[in-house]
Length: 389
Image (cartoon, rainbow, N blue to C red; front, side, top):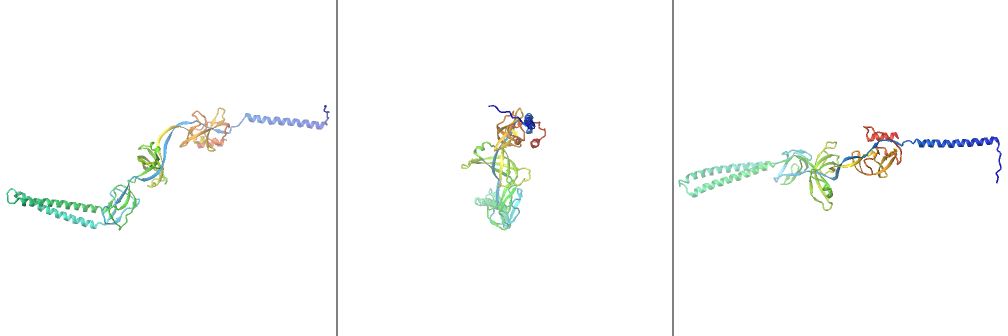
């Protein structure tokens, strides 16, 4: 079948030829920029590199517990029926050993002591007379002027008088002790933690009037499981933080001899001392506290925290390949030590990784690698990388 030849007018033919030539040039123009763009791909980010390092990480054991008084003494009177005449200290006061805490009305005690002193003097006078009589009887014993029974009576009277002197002296000393007990003294240095004494009250023997935290010392009673108990020894160092913000340090003094059969919890007693700080001295007995026991250190593979990116609940790092393209590597993160993270799996010490700015990268991106300034901090490096993007 033959297609008939159609003759176009000269102006229309020229217009069609010009249109075809323009389309050809447009097609060639679209291809040239794509090739140029492929040949000169721009880096997505300017980054610095870091390699995993073997460092010694501290090993700690966290525990909870309560602060308590090291020893709390109960103070009361030993003499019955005395009226409290004066109370000299209150709760929270720091006292010294031998300081007077309270005074009792002691007029009756002083009168009884004076009576005991007089009885002692009377007994001593009777004993002196009996001793003289016994001495004369001994001198006449050889002459026979006195019978043996009379001499024995004088000697017996002397011994009886001496016994009465001893009894009177003991009674006088007892009265002196009671007079001294009319003033309640602090048995040791410490802090008054409780007070029930009130002026004018008549108290019986053994009634508690004050409670004293000896030496003002506190201890941390940490609760640890039976499996964790074997990691601790006497002398293990601990850092404790109370709910008030006070920080304390101490060492294990004793580990509880028993474990609760229901909870499997053991008590570890730690002597603590306050550390300097804004809340220093705010720790109180009965306060909850959290602490960490220092168990030493162990080697671990670590990276700076900015090198690890968290996405969708998982941790990743970006490995830089020979062509400066990055590949996303999933890692398992362990403990945190200051500004470094322990890497449990996913990297090796010879890997070259993006030091910071990984949050702006995707798998396969091209990066420009530069040397990190010697004094640049991780935060500054991350800011520079973000600005260079």
